[in-house]
Length: 371
Image (tube, rainbow, N blue to C red; front, top):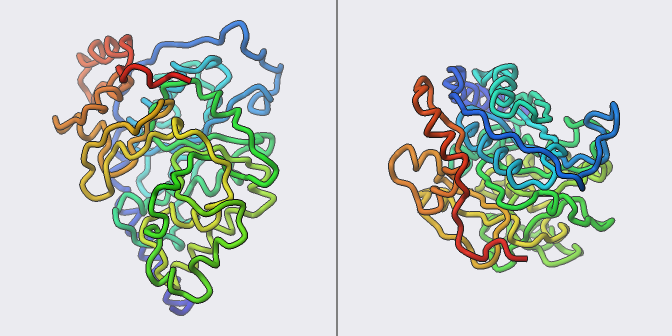
């Protein structure tokens, strides 16, 4: 494909993506105010005037958009509720800019209304930063430019922030996130995440990739360990090492390769695997009980994996808020519902029902929190 053809294709993709986002310009849904949580006596005292650079903070990065905002609000609430030092959490939100996306000021007002004491910042992210690099995926939602914003974290967050926990919007914490924050990253590692070495790693890439004489297994030769699948919805990222190693550019190199050769099918995950598989620091599986949204086609119900649970993740097509609204929830969606702050568009009577749900604890099988 020539340069002119690639430029034309990128322009068409960007136009289509912006048009697809246009409904998001409507008014944002309404959310209840969450209970307020305070630090305990053993929490680190804030450093005067340090702000976001306070070394005692736990930095969490997420995206904000219209459809997933309901999930994001539930995730924030769950993280605060289970944190030992909730006032030490600092949230960094990446939000789409332009193309009919909600205004940053509106998103800021929505978050502040539900969490008046929350420490957070919102960083605008323009679709044209990645539109020319995005390839068609098995599910249209995976093609949204905001899915690729995580690649830009080190460029957007303040340089004084040493690391960040990146979380998808369809997660629910049921444990103290500081435990994940304190994950040790050895000098050779940039990213820490749960690994799933029982998964069929080869299926994340096409036959053309594995049969190519200069790609395939050669790409992963010489890495710290054998390459394994990991889910990019829960990661601890060393931002300084990321910048020093130019990892955004490394990921984008593979995205450019995808334009020349169809080497994968699944959105933003495969480029991450190509760069980091076999190189990440493994984290206990309890921190990403993923796949609760089913597969990328049917979104069918799935149970928790065996073992303890610290974070639940509705990766896949089925999102709990959509299934609840459709009257077809999966069993675990009721756990998510107990953190749902949504009170509708104009129905003020729903507020009392939502608030009563906030006082109830999420029900999970006995023993899932054991260490």
